[in-house]
Length: 184
Image 1: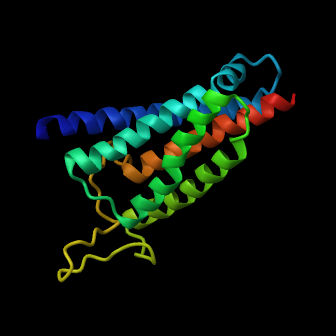
Image 2: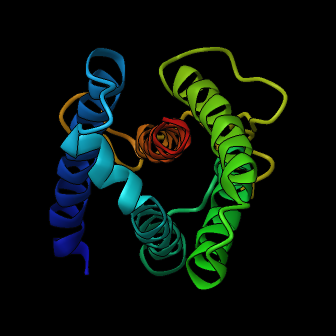
């Protein structure tokens, strides 16, 4: 398994970069071409809940893969990020099943709070001070996991908190697009 981890890390990092490019594409379309006939915005509106479900499912599976199979222990900030991530899977799944469009504000709230935690985690990971929700490395307590430890660090910037932030921003952008395109 060890020999595949590097390939998996690189693949997920490339996927993260592609998702960031999609976010930029979507936001630039929302800013510069808000027409009712914009094919990009219409595509993302049509498949908002399918895409949200798929990325949430992928993120849940990946987080469980790294912690349960690979053995990377999640730090306290990772647990908090998961608190805002895991309900997304349920919300988008319910939305696909019921088709009531009632989860948008809840999902936006979860994604926004997850983004804030991810930004703080990136700050801590890059040398910021360890704060309230982050363990310091204490030699007397081997159960503590520092939030500054990087298990993945590809291309000089892609780490687990960057992946979590990208996911949250993607969910925010597709949901805002859905709200906007539903109004016009």
